Amino acid sequence: MADIAIGVDIGGTNIRAALVSVQGEILSKLSERTPTDPLLALERVIAMARSLDTPEVLGIGVGIPGRVDVDRREILSGGILNLSGLDFVKRLETVLQKPIVIENDCSMALIAEMRIGGAKGYQNVAMLTIGTGIGGAVAHAGRIYHGHKAAGQLGHICVSQDGPPCPCGRRGCVETFSSGTALRRHIAESGLSVTTIREIFNMAAEGNDTAVRVLRQWATPLRAALDNIAATMDPEIILLGGGLGCDAARALADLPPSAPWFCPAILPAKLSDDAGVIGAGLSIFGADALPRRKRVVMVNGVPASGKSRLAKALSLRTGWPVLSLDGIKNPFLQHIGSVDRDFNRTLGKASYQAIWSFIAEAPTGATFIVDAWFGFQPKAQLESYLNAAQIGHVAELWCKVPGSVAGARYASRLKDRLPGHPGAEYVPELVALAERAEPMGCGAVMTVDQTEEPDMAAIMAWLSKIFEGES
Image (cartoon, rainbow, N blue to C red):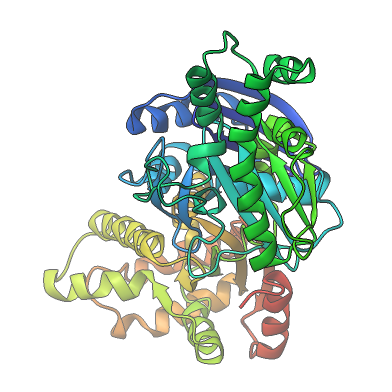
């Protein structure tokens, strides 16, 4: 398996993208301004991912600024940049031809912080990323907690029902008081001629009452939100990340908890602005990323090698559906009648494409048995179909028979074959084909001697190992 992924973090101000190793190391990084138009933002993500992509890249993780249904891979809503109206994942997978994982941007950052950053070693963590807006994420028992769909929207904890309007539709969310956007508003309303939080801290340290008031206007609502998080979730620690996370932690140092019951450690995140892209990359390697992907058992072999019988036996044991070339092609031959060999081959190609189109539309987590002589099409074509259908695991059962056996079996079944299939003249060609044919090798391969009764227990044990731990 490749050990490189692309992580993309879509922020309200910047889109960051990076090549990320399985250890969380950034190998290459890009940053560009975030377009205000959602479609332009999508195109920017595609362009950045393309520029970083290599054959070794396993997949692309994207941190989304908004609510995400991780299981359905859908964007439910957004705030400053709303991507919910776009067919985001399908567009990326179609263009980039790589698996895509999407998650809320703060959840991506928390993945990184728990793996290699400020929350390493902790199992129950809440995190807020403070930047243009405020993102939130929660981890329970070491994994991101999603609730029904999109838990962890901590930036939308209400701290004042009479506060400023929020993009979520309510008033007084902590994001409207304690984000970077809100800080700029506090500074502008104060009349101070400064542009950075560092200047505010310096002025406050020198005793400037206006600067002290700005910091309190910014941090006090955040303290209230953190107290509510502590009361409802009881995390071991609360991390403050994003571009202003360290500054927020510093401002909160002068604002102790209002109640002694609710005082978990509040720490600045360690990975700064890189947390989002690192976590997005790591999501490709994580426990939640690929196990839900589709799986295929390719029952492969030349005609008359016993493929169909083996596929049916496997389906009876597992309940996995069988898709076969003949199963799609034969109904057309029944209606069309006799056709020449070239037309039959064209119909086979169309049936082959139909199989993979069907699998591509199936939900994640599905497993299929495909019964076909895969060698009639180039390996590159098969690999293209596997990528487009988002197949996470491929297991190939190679049905091996001597050429003489394949030829004899084919000849004995001629009377039962529909018009359009090659006749007796094909037998010598099949004998030669069986002697030189090989597996496709797009995944793990098990050779099954089809001159004997297949050992289904051994086949099932092998498949369990290949698909280890997955249902």
